[in-house]
Image 1 (cartoon, rainbow, N blue to C red):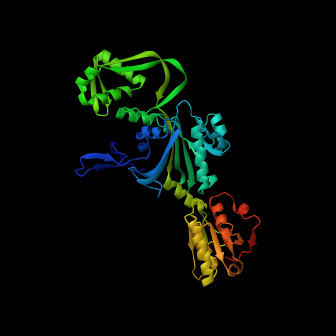
Image 2 (cartoon, rainbow, N blue to C red):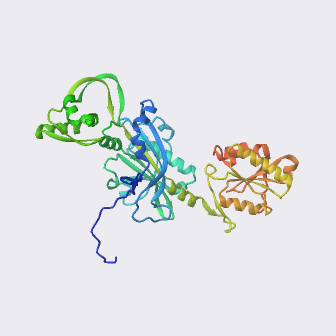
Image 3 (cartoon, rainbow, N blue to C red):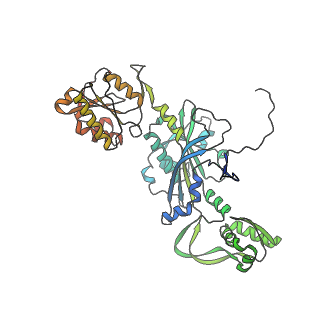
Length: 464
């Protein structure tokens, strides 16, 4: 637009460099994602799971990306909180044992074909049908897509502003089998908040190649079978002379090679008489005769393989921002009254407790109810100020508190109190000893307000 000529391109690192140690001689980088710590610990995690697949590891923490131009408020930042799950699975068996639990969940899918169609529009489809029709690559990926939707709806995301968009071919990482983004609509438009990807075996293979350490699992066959296998036999005498203390690292690097790379290395040795191999202690040169690499037919009862990984990656800040937007509204009957309709399961304060008047007896009962709820893990806010109860309701609505207990004159006579629900402003009356089980059930979202209060005495609402 300005007609200013573009400068020549130059390298730019999206990772933040840092110096390690008192001298700063060692160079490091702040992690751009939490996932890699899980991959490098794969062998320990597999051991903890008894050597069996599938299994998953989850991690939450800070990640850092050297964004060229941070913008969009809290959405594109250089430091952010990320939560990731790495679900390791056999590459040929990506069924999920609990898939039937989510097969009927209806998703709003914006598939690759839908994005390229004349009318670009997401479409509803059950999770089971999406897998059966090949729209989502496999059951495990689809399971996490469905569970992500259930999670987002539970924390208060508007279902009409949620969709799952499939990556177009040019957006896909070269190693990925299938990728979907959970996108949420807010004032900034559609924002990617969760990435769900079948990353195949890329990460484990990349770490194995650089470290020379096998990151594999073992599977036992139901019956032994004859197969062509790769046999790598180092000449221990020559290795000891040539590599001394580094001999083990070179052997480990050879054993970590896949069939294609091993045969390519052997071809180079035959053709040129020497070849270089990357090991955990640096590049090492092999010469012809140091190692025998060949394919042999053997009877085997099992094999090692590199697992695939399904990765849901959650941007916590983006989810929270969208949740705040979707939860905020103004009461139509009074535009001065604003409300955060936080889901009870995530509201920081679950219940406020008001004595109707600043009276010693009412205060004592209110204090007792507050202690009872707090001791059972229900966070409360006790408000004994002398302002009207309507203003106190409005004040806590602004904080997103879903329930309010009011101690009034009748409470001192028969021990009953009123419980108010924030969004409907409906109230019921019950004995103060029944407040805890009711609020716990509602906060755990085990029942709706209508179902949980069925049969209870309805309280006539005063003007708030």
